[in-house]
Length: 491
Image (cartoon, rainbow, N blue to C red; front, side):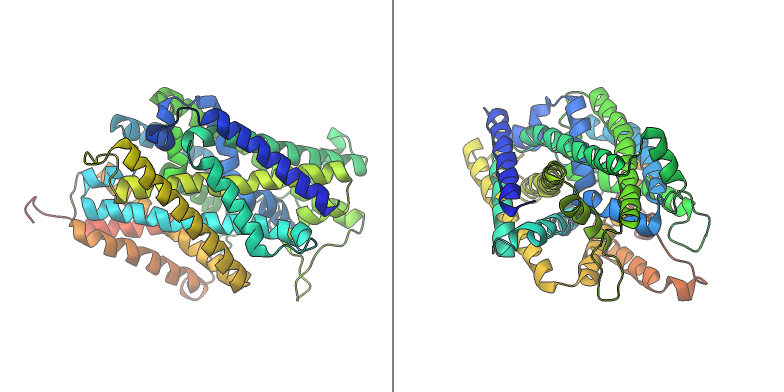
């Protein structure tokens, strides 16, 4: 597939996004930007959230990871389903009852200003690193397979993508993203389904043959019973449950779309529907992963390897899609990849702007500025965060060390544990805390968890932490808050 054809696909898709942006941004204001005027259709939010939840990491990494972890990721996804039920029937009623625009304002009323700012800051740190990491993975693939051949520098590629995302989220915010996420989810799912179809046809497999081919392969194992390994079922399942609660239910980007629904009932229908679709889509990604390796083995298709001769899992899907199938397959892979790239940053950019404007600048309750002045400030913040994301992605490229980048991403993930502990303490106890000490507790907890994780094999007889680390992180934060509880209102 030629670089020029890929570039045409990118431009055509971007033009389509801008048409949607123009259509949805008519009459948009600050309320549209933050919560879509609370008029979003629940079914559009549910469907569109798939693209935002999966991102480029899922699109590239989940199929590639099947080579080493088989279908083990499904254990995590099953845990997600329980987590989404908690979000629908515990967290969403809270957010709607308090009529929240920023979900972190709950912490201000429950504990105080320091807790409030801590929650908002942890979200900003997590989202900046997380969104940059996800965007980096996708743009790096496009750079290696397309733009390097065209002589386009990496920083130019990133700058163009960030500029496009900045422009189509600049005015409409959540109101626009609800619709663009729907478009992006569609292209992503179509790309995966067609990739499965193309491989099945090339291997002469019908639906029944396809099932048996995967079931009989080395890649189909789903449940794991080694308690010391990261893949142990209870670790994956309960870790997935609390990851969903923390990284969706306590994440402004994800909840900003949910609370844009007109009623609580609509928002709940959205979350439950979304969880069912997410299960199906993740199964499709795992099926695709198994087929990619089966195809590579059967057809002796060369895959990219590192210096140690180990297959680079993130290269498996793009290598086969772009180098071993026809133009149609390549086009839909690129469309799916772009669809994974945009949600990595558009929702994050909107949510980061919202949190900073609402939680740090207090624009919603500011009566000294006109709406026009507030809009100008919001625009500046929006541009500022786009610049920050651009800079972090470039830093990742300069580091050029996957181990370091993964460590940064891991650290960003640790910051959801304190949010989990804060909300759990607020919801399930009536205790007050010494508010000024909360930031300290929320910093200590991830440090303890990181240390335990680094030395877990030595400390716990070979035990390896997996996704259950977020549970421990939240529990340590909860304990720390209990230790700094106030005995009286005047304390």
